[in-house]
Image (cartoon, rainbow, N blue to C red; front, side, top):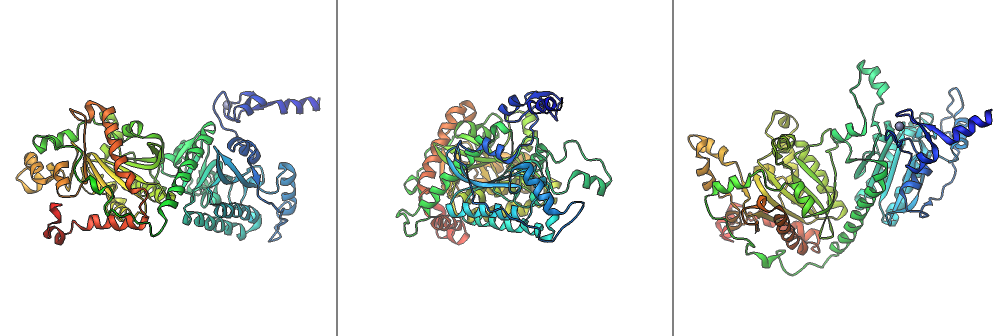
Length: 571
Ligand SMILES: [Zn+2]
């Protein structure tokens, strides 16, 4: 009777999500995701490895079993006894399994935590093993992937456990300095000291569907605040909405997502190595220096008409271009500080096979879309997301392409409270010294500081019907004319068309649009944009970073009044 019951237990499992009785083999075939309700059941570290690495490529790091009881901790059961029971119960030496492997053909170092082992708690041995994995990544020049599942620091090892948060973070910092990609995959549950260190201080944070992550656990928060917690608190979707994670990924999609990230990092590293060769400065001083003639001609008619054309809701948006002019876009989300701004989108993509980071303002075509995207007006969180992605691109050696289309930065009360001015300022500063090629394209409206926050670039392109201006014509008219009905006059006076800005050197090149504008033939518009970005980006790819930055500074320095007086404005 007992034997039968235990055999049944091995054959069948009850889903914690929907209570369905599931045949274990079927569940395993489905990556331990309930086929009925989609609930992701917890995985052991060995099973997780089996699912994400290429078959037969995992090599464990040399692992010395550590007998450790640094503070002689005793609760109901002495700590060594608990440790022995965890080892016997899991077949593992500790709460993490580390090694090297390949994912989608790309070599990586991995550390995968196992929640079954004392709640995946972070003790001295766990910290040491993850640090060794990070050091191995550094020595081999390969990315590090961490899969977290932990209740937090291990109480039984006292303050020494707390110190592991710093130890591992230090190792992550070493990889960051070396331009090696670090990715964490947050799985259920990830809390406390692990959440507050290597689960979130990596370059890219993925949350598996169904994962919950937080610093404090829900029970503690309820106790302290005496309040009920909101629906979906600390779930993967909550974390995404609050800018804490780059994306939520189903277990089935995880391997594919990791492969894309690793491929981009691999390409960036090769490119950075090429650019990093000192003394290889190309002779031509301006990249694409022989392309000073605008590729497109000025649109006829009144500048006010151009302003209206630039605002046409049918014009392709950044996401449209990502879908047509680029390939394989993987969107990264969040400012890591509490928000994800819908008016700015960004992530990894390929342009004609080259890996790039694309960041742009996102408007929409319908009123609903425009409202959801705040009309493409970025909040401070949007600027901080852009900043995070620019810096990530530079670290990984990937060029940045920005698509500018905004009436201006969000002018709301909340934006002011969250430091809109400083957020824009920081982006301008960061872009001016970003050690990687940057090509900006004004695709519609280039509104003021909000536009410049994405447009301090090596090459600034403008679509034929785009405009770029210090203030909207309406705003200018309201201030300098008797009333805002003078907007058309202001539009003429501001010199905001692509032709005008190419003439004074603010833009380098005008990009042709299909007859009737980009909205008349979005596919043709995408092809024109793709070709223009490629032509401008390609010559920059082999320029050493220091040269790029020096030229970028010169590019903007020449707008100084003294230079204009010397005739540079006639360029
Ligand atoms: Zn289920």
